[in-house]
Image (cartoon, rainbow, N blue to C red; front, side, top):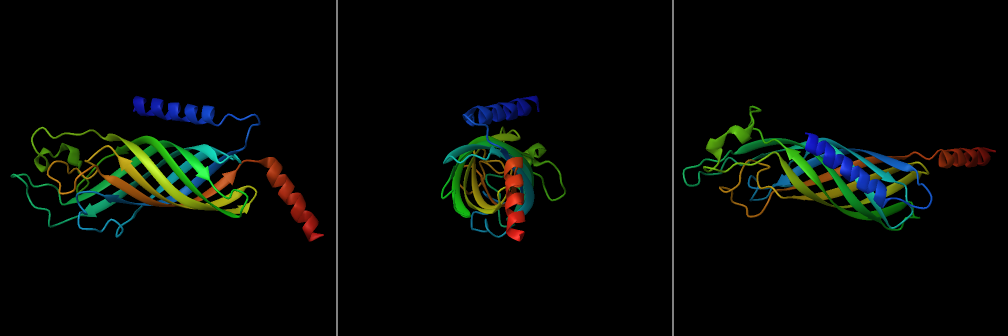
Length: 235
């Protein structure tokens, strides 16, 4: 846990350093609702888009007018998957069901286009950490169930994550925006579902998420100016 906290603090420091500009920009906080599914050994025949599980996400960035700006993200969620037809391999019967809660923290570089328009698209890419705990239908930790994996096949509960995102933001007011995003998260682990060597899908497990976010910009000057304009309009 200490290592995770240190890495999170390092990411925050990097975001702060990368966002240094001649004039201090106001902070923008994002609060989002997220639906997550996964791509792995329990949906080799499709179904990655059939089941999304709920989660939440927070983001922090500077309200910069530049094309590129850093964004710090953290959140939590879970995914559930099942394949009753998964057969034993070399005498090892892998789990046919998994429910995996996870959390993540990452630093992204976000490119926003058409920034003066009411609706502007964006792309982002980043790097971070993903913590996960695959469990069976009864909530038991599968990492301790060695019978579901080959001898010597062990794994930890942390992996690197590489989130790739595309989305759009709608400007509601000078201090409020709404965003819709799709994220494809590449990981360096093949055990998000507890299935590794006996799995049928090559490569590491991935996550995909749909995210709806409300962004609040902490800019008193913009809020005050907006209030004065609306007051004049009423007159």
